[in-house]
Image (cartoon, rainbow, N blue to C red):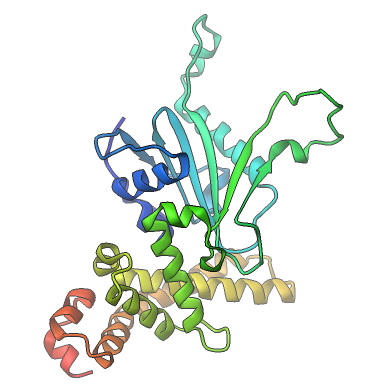
Length: 298
């Protein structure tokens, strides 16, 4: 089992933040009340070419003989998550298992799966709840009858106002929740602009929230978050109008081109916001990669 971090992750801040062994161990300890350290073997697995491929905000990793899948949900939690996880797990096991051994006399051992969803959507939901595969079965179980197959999904509401227990246990998840909350509060009339995201990121850096992460990836974080909120707005509009055919392909193509073209403007916007707030030029250079001359011209 390798401890190398896979850099092929999909472009979401959630994945970028937790595509890191130290942060994953900290979050795992918070979720399962363990005390593992950096000496603990952990392997991050990229999710590719399976039914789950459209989930942009998921991380799968193996630790402590467990196979963990974490998913961020930015809108209403899909009640079909247990079934989707079941299909996903079957695909993963098929890829990782020597099927010839299934016909042998020895038991084929597999990591115990755990499925966790972090919800930060707009609806008022509980701090914690569970989704169960058996709730999707046709017909009800009789008293005393047990299901031959079940799969439970733990769902944590990480919206800041919910003050969920998991935020108190995980400094990194608390910081991520604070970042998203500041972006929403910086939005003008419900519209999340690039400038709002820049100011939210800059304020988190200034207040020491996710400092190492944001100082290193500030421009990328701005681009990813702008893409995320823009995708949500476009998707909502298209769904309301009934134009959902081909949405994912067209939306992805257009936004990716815009993000690529706007990469430099993101850095300039961030530098301008930091300069306006009186941040030292040397720090602005560190956060944005712009030269002192470029910063002075802003």
